[in-house]
Length: 539
Image (cartoon, rainbow, N blue to C red; front, side, top):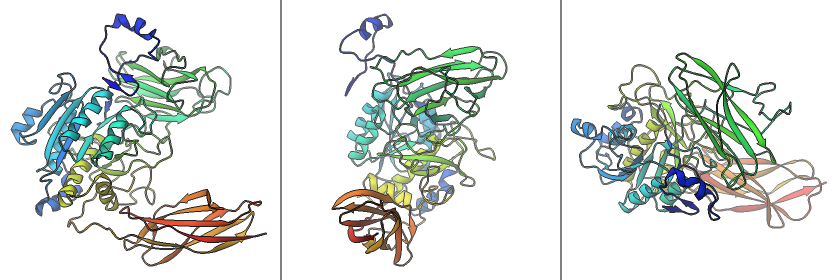
């Protein structure tokens, strides 16, 4: 299969050296398989979906696709009634639909519990290219919502890769793509290359070149290293895993030559028979710039010694995906492993959070505390997908953006930091017990004349209001009609018409006609007209 500049082909291993020397081939790598984001469900009650079920809102007439790595045990759960018998299936995983993994089956359980009358379409995939095939298949079937609980690490982290293009195509065709945000909050580090002693190794902290963790006996871990020099690496960084006795256990082997993506991988399994303390080291083999470096760890392992935010996986990182974080269904507390934003290009992610650690016919029951049962953002994403199916039934004309806005607007806000944030997005999923007409009233905003002194902070004033009581503001400063500064605020309270402002440091030497232009947006996505007013500067 050909995707833009990528060709997916099955070739004998012995032909790879010759293939890599072909003038038309930039690099050769194995397709990335993706990682399932998972570490009768309580999510139905916790999200208040049960109240809508009682009113006959159950997903009737809505088509939902589950794209996943496999559906082992599907027939058994169909026999027990946990999954309906009339599902439509698509095999894009080379005949491994029914035995590659049970993960997709568990995801399907949740979608069905949340939207018991929705028509389900199940597609198995085994690499990036097959995800595109599955998305096209779902689109041809008339699907309105796609649930995707798989994460990829070997793309930039902004949705620009192969799997991100599947989410983008879905959104362009009115389909809501719901993605698991990832479970890497404690298994991710990012930074720039720092090497105080000049020995070629990254300093994770002053004097510490090892990012350590503990590996249980028999457990394995993989490290994914990437740096922001897309599409082809200029620098060359290598990833290695060392024991606490300074023994090299494994290292990446890619030799970057300017024609390969900036990605390295190394995997290791602890076969020592006991606990093992190990640590990742990053070697700067050829450093010609200072790009952001990201290290993701994959596996059932203890947290990294050094962790940073920005752990959203692909394609949840895409602007076209509704990225879902995980909160414990019992108390709406953010799960410690739920991946957090921002994205590499500075956007807030996840977009919303939803309940996990729910009882599952596949992964077992909830046993008193989180995490247990079916835990992880893999469980949260289908919870949101099922919720979206309920809203789609009640609002047949809604496209993807409207479904997303409806869910975000009604989320339980401020379960973490105030406002929309990089931990839980708009907050935890909570469905309305009664479906009312969607908010279609535009907010009002009016730029007010402002004045101040050059070389000082100037308050740019505006008058704001919305019937929902909350708006966010975009204020642009213009000189002679050209935008020189843009400010975007968080949502602010406007229960009645309010005068708001943003602070603009006016340059000491600025000249010309200065104006500021204001636009307001409410939580339903409605926007006001743009108005402008003069800024008078003295001094």
